[in-house]
Length: 409
Ligand SMILES: NC(=O)c1ccc[n+]([C@@H]2O[C@H](COP(=O)([O-])OP(=O)(O)OC[C@H]3O[C@@H](n4cnc5c(N)ncnc54)[C@H](OP(=O)(O)O)[C@@H]3O)[C@@H](O)[C@H]2O)c1
Image (cartoon, rainbow, N blue to C red; front, side, top):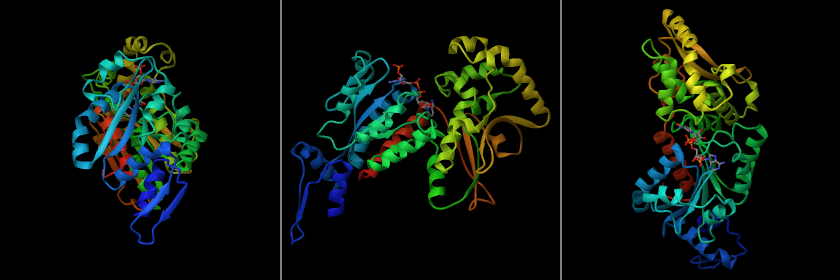
């Protein structure tokens, strides 16, 4: 009981100044700062299931993923409260243009209008509102593709926020940034969760972590890691032009905000970097050989300009496709990591009887070959992009966080 009591205070960042336990072992007293009393009481009550496990949430970005997450949180809120005593409170939403805050929380039935009518983003106000004195746990969800926000992650963790994100830019930035984030999260007893940065809602990072932490030796990882490129090459056939399929992938919400991120191979390369670092390899983006599918002249300019010129690429892509088809092969964009060897992202010709050739829709497939999985590899396969599955993966990280904090999920 004492362990649970003090763990709950510790998780909520409450400084314990004095402790006394009666010899009857029927009471524990502790002295804390008066201004942390409500927060401490909530933390302790919820850890013994005497009240709900409350999480104050700030969502940054209300694009495809952010919006879908907010709708999913709304749909599940009642069930989580009733069945699991979890109270997930979205208290703020912030985008690059607007911000809205809610007390005690934003009514998620109607978050779009207040956000549209909201004020200009004010980070100081936003962070203070997500971390009020009376709530024990606060989490920020970075649902943007920004490469500026990850620069702030360490500061947020130091201030006591937990962090959940599908944004790859932090963990695939410099190795120094990756290591700093892991170190700061550990030092401040905060959780930094990013399961959706590889494979969207699929259990790729968590599977790899389980292999590594239980002492398996990972010999290679190969993967079709981009839902967008998987969809594009799985749908590419004699009836459809390459440029038409790229547009369709964008309309379905599979692509990055700028689809050139996918076609350049950078998105897959970032995912490889994240997987490599989870394996303990000190890999930087520059160490990965990347085959860029965006022609040099098409790399600048706006997304719309590029899309209007994309049909110019159709001829070259069709030639590649027919060459593969005539050898009973298909095209797949594959990333691979070989510890001690080279890591690369390339368009490969895959024989029709190989696992990657069986992919359909926007499926991802990751093949782990390890000391334990050497006769047959461990394969994770399924939809690896799209707002519903990605937002659900972020949601699952939020529930994982409440479980780490002592909730029932
Ligand atoms: N789509 C998928 O299947 C998938 C799968 C796995 C991971 N992801 C990742 O999920 C993240 C979100 O993707 P998305 O498709 O939802 O992107 P999106 O539709 O472009 O939405 C991005 C949102 O972030 C906001 N934003 C951008 N920069 C910001 C900043 N500096 N400060 C505050 N807000 C900012 C934008 O606000 P404004 O509209 O005001 O500019 C917008 O609301 C990305 O990192 C992506 O890589 C996506």
